[in-house]
Length: 214
Image 1 (spheres, rainbow, N blue to C red):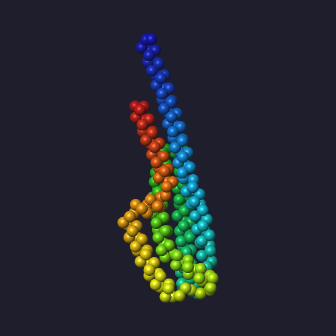
Image 2: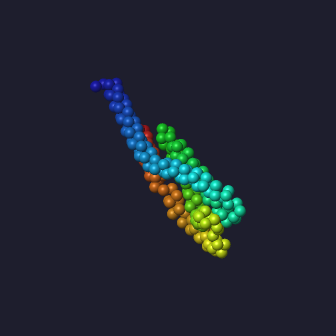
Image 3: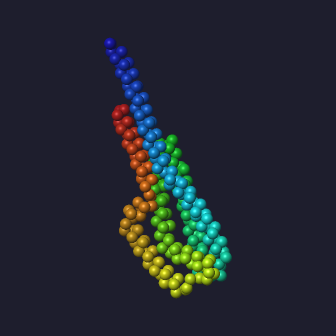
């Protein structure tokens, strides 16, 4: 075999190896992306449920406070719960929009960026909506009492319980600042970190293939 034949053989072998490497990368990427999609489907479904729940709450409590404008306690309670329902709709809608922007045909870095935005957004709104229930449970109790009996809860009970709830809210905010990691983990959930891990594996595999081809 002369030199030209050896060069041609090496070029043929190199082309085959390149095709095999590209195929391996494609199969690996597709398998990890399929798993990432599967990890995030329950989160998407739950956000849609929350949107419907928030719409229902907004409608129900809007009707309530409109009918109780003569009672300050019932009015404020209804407005607060109505506002929380609207906030839930807005926050969950942003989640859904970010989840639907995860086009897996795009470069992995783009998908990772969008997933990072989703993670940041959930860390921002989840704790705040959760902490609001330090006060909203009393508002819900007031609404229930007004709807069932046509009367407000006793003024003394409302005043002292609100004061206690404000202290509770302050303690929760202080805990949030000191142990942010716990709240962040709870806000993000499990599906997003798992999807991020799968995308990181794709990125690492792409780098390895790129280094091997040099």
